[in-house]
Each structure stands twice: as structure tokens, then as C-alpha cells.
Image 1 (cartoon, rainbow, N blue to C red):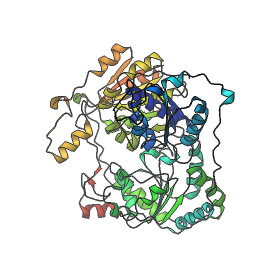
Image 2 (image 1 turned 135 degrees about the horizontal axis):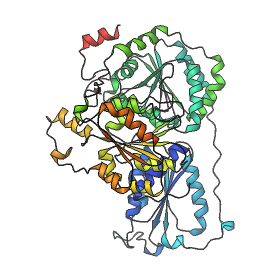
Image 3 (image 1 turned 90 degrees about the vertical axis):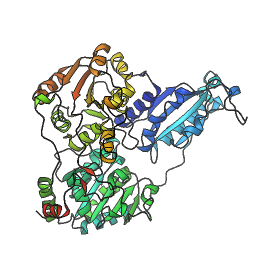
Length: 547
């Protein structure tokens, strides 16, 4: 597909991000100067914190209108120092001052964005240089330095295998470092040979299918209990492509996997060193890209003998059965809303084997990542670390630009959709076959739950009663030209989903969610991972874990 014009520059950066995540190639956004450039910032942060390669091309005032060193705020109309603004959230931010250097800067930007730990780059081009005549044949090219291989990687990989083979209660954690699609199959081959339980960060949701043998699933602050217990009971954690964010470890770092040897493999040394003196001890640090690690692991696998862990595997299976899931029963039709978890489990059955599912933030992300029954070949994509509301729809637009024949779905909350509402028109303008599922609980659910937990339900700006303005999204979508399907009764979920998936082209599905549905289980503040609300008494928890 060619160029896609979106309604807002923030959406342009996010669409480039979505394109890159799904395709594995560089996503590009072109915007005007000043506010057009600054509107990119949220999307650029999404790419920077998740290591997604994108290129932002921003306009700038003519070179003779640049303020330079003059002690003024602005000379040219809309002049804005984008290099300073974007310098901390891009791998490089450069302003073109010589039109004969444009080829070198473009080639260098591509190289920087796509090499080592990937990420966004920005090139700022003054208005007069955009109109300068150049001869492409005379332009200087960029010559990257040769990449030096990691000399001791084979030794490190053999050390990893040695530690895993000796473990009694090991687990492997797979994260967003495998986000490039072409590495997923190699990872699954590696996991099959490793033969230990698999834990997933949300960014690793789609790396193994739901039915994968040995899959435990997600864990963390909003993760299921069984995943957290496996982390806390393990004696070795092999962490691949995950920075172990606080959403995974909880706030008390010295309680995280306190009985486990921790091995980290990451392309960024700083991500492994950041725990020094902070409570988490890293036994072995392997600096390598996931591509290089998997290639060397494949070469060394012949000497690896999987650990004998049948007792450990039996314990995990029993915990899956006995630990409370805190999944509420589907409500009666009289409630006029459905249960979010029940809906995620149901819609899982309708997604195509190659569906690309873009998910926003908040409750819809939590319920989806914890309960979606992912199939091999599907992608689940979100802005995992920056996680702004309003990401999923423009990201899905970028995803649809990769291949308009690939099934694309967007799961977004009402709070997120209001921030990118204009992009509904973009979907219709290009007739993008995106199925938009609005999780409509008529509130900001996580904020509402937080105020209940900490401030005695003293609500402010979290629902219509406390000042939040939300439109009738059914009417909005219908007035714009979408076919609209609403699901508000448990008994009609299957029937309505059949209607949605039978529609070719864009469709808007309004899913009425319980406005008081909680995100449970959730880590209790000041506690370790196994202590999630609703709390289980320590004695009772030990009884459950001993079964």
C-alpha cells in the first residue's frame, strides 16, 4: 500500500510504529514544522521505549530564519527546536544544513534506526533546503563501520545451558526483544529444545500459542497468580529479551525471585546493569541480540541435556487448577453489559490464524494479554512500555498499510478512542478492513479502581458522574459511515461476533463492559508478587501451593 494520510501527526508517528512492528521494516512519518513536529512526540516515545525502528521527517523554517545562537525564543514562524525536544527519545536527531548531505543523512538514519538496539530517528529539514536542486549522482553516501561479533558469545551460551541443566525449578521468560517477526520461529525451536516452563511478558504474548506445551503464561503486577507463583518459587530464571520492568518485578526488587539464579540476555548492557545495588542480583549477563543468541544457541544445543523437572512441572499444573483466577461469572442479560474476560475468551475463537491484533492501554490491554487464546501466526501488538491511551487505532492503520489483505483488529477503550477519534475517518477513507472493538465501560476503569483503593472512591473526572465527557460512540461511528454492531448481553456474544466477522471491510463493534469490573488479581502495594488482591491469607496460600 502507498502513502496513508492520517488526521493527526501523533497518529502519523504511531502508524509508522505499528507498520514497523507488524512488518519488521522501517516505518516513516512526514510532517510539517513546529506543532506538526511536536505532535509526533508521543508516538516517537512508543517506538523508543519498545525499540521499534522508525524515521521521522520534520519540516523546519528556512535556514535564514533559524534563531541559531541569538537570545530569542523564535525567529521563523512556528520555529521550534525539535532536536532538543527529541534528543532524549530518539537514537539520533539531526538537522540538515547542507542539501548535498541529504543522502548521507538518510542512509545513516536508516542504519542507526535498524542496528543494535533499534529505535526511532529524526531528520529535521529546513524549508529552503527542501526546495534545493540536487544531483543524486553527486551525493555522498554513508559508509557504516563494520560490526564486530561478540567474541565470547559461545562461551556465554554454554554457561547458560549449564545453569539451566542443573536447575530443579527453572523457567524461561520471553519478552519484547523478539518482536521482529522473523525471529519467532527460531525462538519456538529453541524453547522446544530447552524443555522448561515458559513465562511471557505482555510484549511476548504472541511468541508462543496458548496451547504451547510448558506455557505458563504472563506474570507481573497485573498478571495471573500462577505466573507470579512460578516466578517466586523458581530456582533459575532465564530472561530473554526482557528488561524486567517494574510492572513485572513489582516495587520491592529484593523480593523478586529471591531464591532464583537470574540469567539475562539483552542487547543493551545498561538494562542488565541497572539492578546493581538495587535488590536484584543477576548471576550471568549475556550481551547479545536475540538473533545472535538464538543462532549461537542452535550451534551449541547438541551438548545440552534438559533438566529432570517432572516434579516441578506437576506442581505448576496443580497451581493452575487450585489458585483462584478471580474471573467473575458472565452476568445475566438483565445487567445490559457483559464480562470483559468472557468476551476476550470468546473473541479468541473468531480471530483468524494470521490476525494482527492491536491493543490499547488500560483494562482492555490487561484483560486481552491475560486471557487471549493466541494461535500460532497471530500477532498481538501494543505500546508496551510507554502505553499511551489512543495508540491502538492509528497503530492498526499502520498495520493495515503493510498488507491490506491481512486480518486486522483493534481493541481499544472508550477513554483511548476519544483521543484518536479523527482516525475513524481515516479508516473509512482508505476502506481499511479493520475490526474495531470498543471496550465501552463508560469510564476510565484503572483510574477509577485506583481512587477506590487509595482515596475511598472519591472520584474526579473518571466517569460521567464525576465530570468525564464521553460521547455516544455508537452514534458517532454510525454517523461516520461504519456498520455498527453492539454487544450488551451475555447470551448474544457468539451471534454478534459472527455478524462482526462476516462483514468485509471496516466495522465498529461496541462492547458494553461492566463499568465496575475490576482488574483482579493485582499486586498489593508494598508486597511481593505472590501477594495479589484479593488477598489470600498466608496459611491458606501455603495450603494451596502444597497441593
